[in-house]
Length: 224
Image (cartoon, rainbow, N blue to C red; front, side):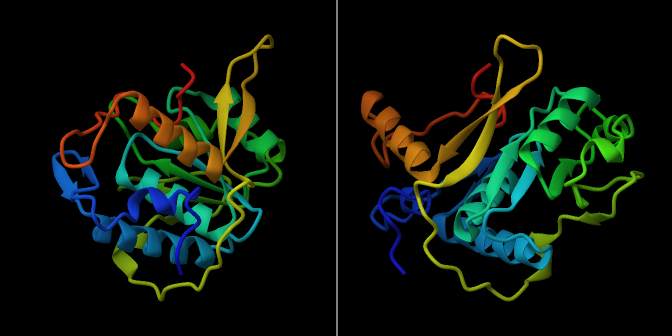
């Protein structure tokens, strides 16, 4: 199935563009390898009961899982709510509540940040839509929600048939500051994200095979 040229998938499906598509922590990832990771993340999310219109919250540092989950959500017609890694209990609870996230995927640990410990400051009743946690990495998890490991890249689940999702529907919710103290959510569609990426590439005169883009900002905090 060919992708809509305004979709996220179309950004990495140019067969004439050279590999690798990404480099994470010194490891090169080809387009074919990334496609396999997206397949795995799609099947894993479907196995967790995530489908069209469902929201998953992603509370991760910049890593391949973040990208794979976004592209997987686009395939399923679901939505990623990006959670800033600097947030503490009150802000995390606020984003979970207003987004209606069913699943929260989080880091086990990053530097001095103990993500599971931050969750202990959240009352389950304050985030009634949240059903499950999935932890990336190794570590103990004690929380008032069922918890699983995000092991999509290890399991080899059968591929889930998907249809072309509406590229004009929301696929990503970013938090942004405003006149009130609590974060607000701004919805972006695949068409918006893909169009912006293409516009930036043109403006910077970035060409395949000649340039690489260093992503220094946190994926979850583009407005800061």
